[in-house]
Image (tube, rainbow, N blue to C red):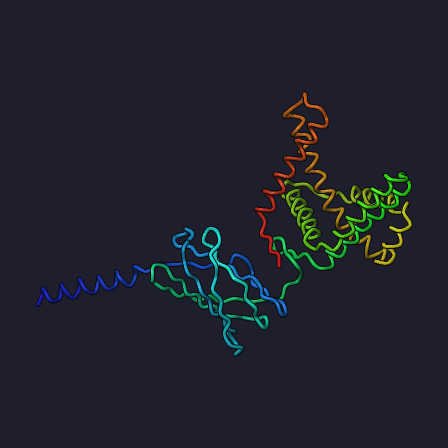
Length: 300
């Protein structure tokens, strides 16, 4: 009898050990899930076990709304880098969803349930949760257009003949880039990322300095009739309010650039001015890459 009880205990322990020997996967969203009308949006997860990335999984997901019956949305996720799995999924409406993930490896399947909050995006991209809007991109299109108008009027004033023709051809080619949304988005991300770094380093945008920079820009723009016309069409008050926001970031970035120039001069006191500026610019670009990689940037 005692032997039978011992055998039963051993079998029970073995069964419990078998039940607990399955993988203990942890799933996290790498970025928020948003919804846009008639567009599939990226769903990306990271799978870990004991804080280590899990690779080589087959991952499928089924999403259904928690409080409404709008059917089930299915997707098979493709493996990426470092335990990430992603696919684009088109949902009908924002709200609370239940996601059932099926993770398979070596013929063994594991199911995980996750509650998701799907929202409408407030812009086209975000940096650490702060949105970049279509209005921001429209403003940058205008800024780029203003610079082209300045270049155009300057070329007509300073060049003649074949050289003028070459300058006008080049400016014309640049106009095609005004509609490049990705280029404008990159401009915004670069500016805001480095402004955030400046603040992290303890720099502040002195309002007096910002206003001085604004006055310099006003004087420059006032020299060109085509530029003043475009600003008036946009709305002068609205334009200068947005421009002041931009120059708060620019003044912050200027302080980072000054720090880099000072460091370059200190590291190489015998170097010429051109070499100093080149070295500082290279370090600036390295800082920019590092800063962008450290931020949570979501592009829709």
